[in-house]
Amino acid sequence: MKFRDCVGGFYFNSAHYTPVGGSLLLHGHTFSVEVCVSGSLDVSSYWVVDFLKLKELIEGLVKSLDYSLLIPASDLNKVRFEGPFKTRLVSLDCSLITAECLAKYVCDEVSKALVGKGYEFLVKIFEGVDSYVEFVCG
Image 1 (cartoon, rainbow, N blue to C red):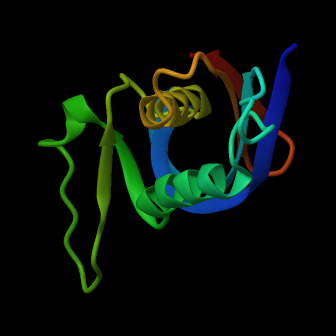
Image 2: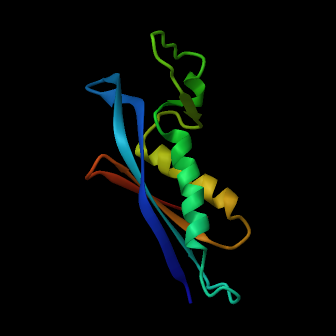
Image 3: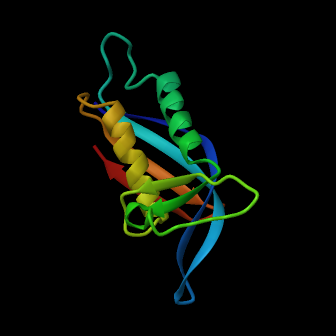
């Protein structure tokens, strides 16, 4: 018997650049994250995964992405900013930062943290209010 435990309501604000009208355009979003963990019940706890531990894990990931400029790792040495402000660059191993890239990143990080349990993970990344990506890994 398989169960799916899900947590949501996690938000972060980040900028990225993607093709818009044929050119790479820098812009930002409020992203939201939902994560589901599917698996069998743990006989000692009678749950698939502890909601509190899963929430703590997702909160840490979201915090690491919040108020950052997300860039492909291959562009790390190409991006420069100057001004009376701080910048926080977060590089991800994708050729372009998309909702799909973010979903894979979150899924990979969650599966690393919960390795060896035979779980399957579903990650939903919302880009704004009504557009989202689902990614399954594990």
